[in-house]
Image (cartoon, rainbow, N blue to C red):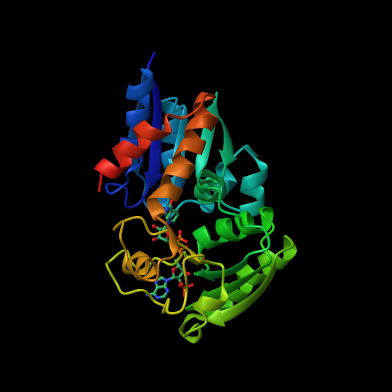
Length: 273
Ligand code: NAP
């Protein structure tokens, strides 16, 4: 019998996950389908019941459910308990186990390109859900320190406290006070949603150079203004789609217990732009 997978969230029609996973099924000739399923914010519980009824094999979770899904899970893995949010769920006879593949997905491009994180000085823009997974990733890879710059300073402070708890030295800044300091960092990451609507980069990247790694986790559009400014300064760039692909391949491996067909998934993703 065909196995069913899904991504849940609201909105969901823009999600590229059905394209990416369907391409993997085609590539490996797997008898599986992957659907986008819109579950509004206050209908999560009944939505999950529905998924159990159709014997869903597994599902991804996106905005706005990543944190609230936690209370419906029977088991969680280490990444999930560390980050406090889940984005990949396995269903075994009605028992749900949660994973968080955002952290490994974020780190994947560094590994693929052989870029070192250890002892680096990081500037992180943003302090939302994705930023939390990113802080956990930098702590895991033993970065030297992280400066968290955010519009709402209280959110940056909360994330900084989390960084301290998991052994990563940090400080905080209001985003408008970053000014011309980008050049003092080895790795600069945009984890705000600024760029999604083609906005200008929220910080100046003047003075960075060909050794600076600039990573925008916004994946649509692919060439955000932040990425364009990084390229103008000859920096090493990592695109948001690379993280998206990293978390999707990891989710695939959790569900199917086999290596994900990276190139087929990448082709499907880039075709979606
Ligand atoms: P979130 O929890 O809602 O956090 C949003 C962050 O953006 C907060 O830090 C918020 O600051 C900041 N922000 C929003 N509008 C802003 C503005 N106009 N000026 C300055 N800062 C602003 O969202 P999230 O889940 O962390 O996701 C953030 C972005 O990452 C989204 O665009 C999402 O699509 C993308 N993402 C990509 C991947 C991938 O695989 N590539 C994975 C996850 C997320 P405040 O604290 O002040 O509100």
